[in-house]
Image 1 (cartoon, rainbow, N blue to C red):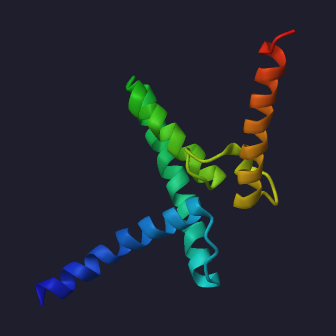
Image 2: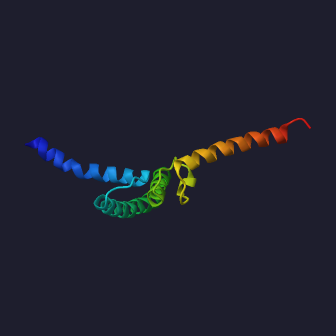
Image 3: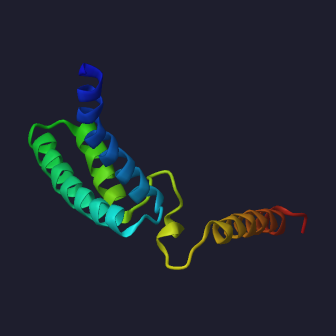
Length: 118
């Protein structure tokens, strides 16, 4: 009996965690889960902004910076280690890979044309 009660109590934080990760990963969900995600993100942004206020007023720089990064991640719907180009409309993972290849080729070309023997 206790195990069932324990599992029911932990289902809500688990759902919130999964919805936040789905939001940051930009996973398309059903209409009902999408509505839940919108509510969770709205409440999370407010909570994180309150955390930033408290942390910065107490002078705790490092936790305040991490809270600001989390706030930015929630508002942009992407993880902080992902490419900023992902924010652009119609920017797919395939397009990002092609851009990385072209940037690398451009850097190599620029290096050999500027440092090459003249």
